[in-house]
Image 1 (tube, rainbow, N blue to C red):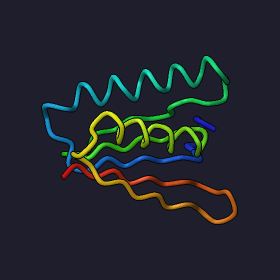
Image 2 (cartoon, rainbow, N blue to C red):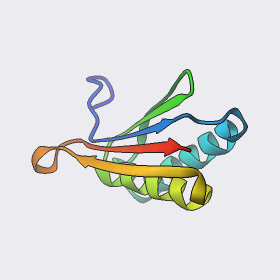
Image 3 (cartoon, one colour):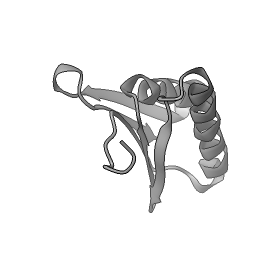
Length: 99
C-alpha cells in the first residue's frame, strides 16, 4: 500500500495558521500511533505541508474521519469540516478549513 502510494482516507486541512502547526502535527501523529497500536493496518501514511495547507493520507477511511473529528474537537470554532465519500466504500476525503 505504501509502496504503491495507495490510500483509503485523506484529510486536507486548509489555511493552517502558523501558530497551530506544531499542535496539529502532534495531534495527528499521536492519533496515528494510537490507531496503529490497536490495528497494525491502521496508520497515517503521509503528512505534507504545501504553503498553508496540510494533506494527510491514511490506510483506512475511518481513521481519516476520526482525525478530522478530533481536529474539530480540539480547534472547535476555528474550523469548518466537509466530508466527501468515494464511490462504494472507496477513498474518503475530509476537508477541514481554518476560518
